[in-house]
Length: 181
Image (cartoon, rainbow, N blue to C red; front, side):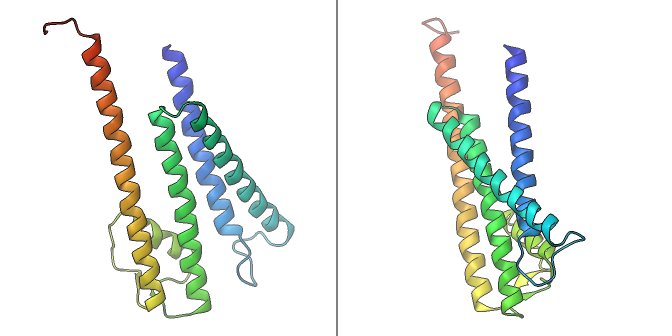
């Protein structure tokens, strides 16, 4: 039983790592501008992009299938939310980067994809260091949408965790002998 849990944890950790890796491949090698990012160009960059997209699709399908098979699996629900966060962070970072490329001046301090990813993650964490910030109306609206999403995700994670705690307490109560301690 202990070995099954350890294998399950390792499997979840590997799938989460794979999700982040695929999202980063997709993010950094999506051909948005004339000059590809990094040293890879042409076929290798396109291949990295396709691998990232295919990996994210496969992971989403795998997680949805697993959730349908066991809808009460708390850890599975948390992993599903984390996958959604990974995808949405990638989406917002891409949006911020493209917005700044197409309409310069929307952000102060956002010049690279890494800056956009940094801004997205700092916004998700509600830290807001101020070194990169929205200046234009479109950037401010997009940031407000992301903050609303982030608050929803935090609420969902709290709800999942709370239901898991309540379920465990209920199971513990049923396991006790009648009449007390």
